[in-house]
Length: 151
Image: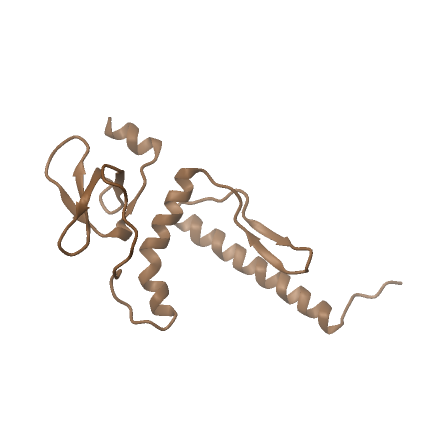
């Protein structure tokens, strides 16, 4: 009769696997609360025995949504890691001039035209109108649905 492995290494392997699955489930739940689904999200054991959370391939729209979530959550993550919680600080990311972006707070579509005096992005409505400023963490690339609604 085969005995279940109870060596320290076996226990550590089960603990690592359980932790990877717990983190994977938490990520799935967090992304789901933001309306993002990663169909290939799962846990994989590597040849070295490590358990890795595999995100899998995603469409450019989903990757853009993930980027927007990361930008929006960056101040919180810095605070949790021991920094002081403040609004998003200076970052090096800037979209290209004329790039279409969606203001996540209002759903408005606009073209990036530059930065204002505070470092916020200035968007010009694609259909004309007055420009407005929005924080770097409060924009995302447009989806096909966004482009269809704007035309």
